[in-house]
Length: 103
Ligand SMILES: [Zn+2]
Image (tube, rainbow, N blue to C red; front, side, top):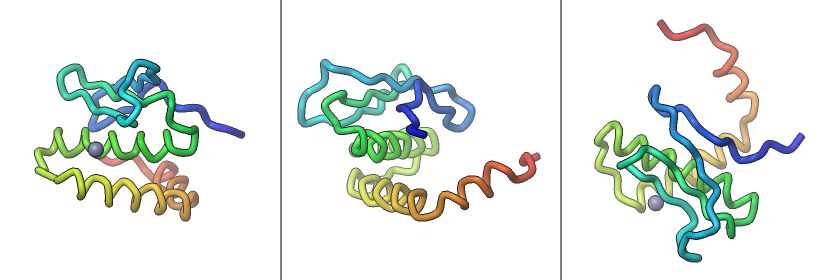
């Protein structure tokens, strides 16, 4: 089964639309928009790249929401690391999803 880019993600309770756009600068792969709480992904990115770009932009959103003050370099490193972690450990994701609701 191939999963498509989600049309939205829920980040700390906020529903954040994920827009696949064809009008972005070719050197910009993704963008987190703190004004309207949305994420744009550049359609020119290959499918595989869109996945890591989405993780990257989600981390920008978390950085913003939690006021972490991460640098772009921090976010770049974390997004690569999370992507690799998720890829290497799909059972970790299912284990987490399957667990009891946090109260
Ligand atoms: Zn970035």
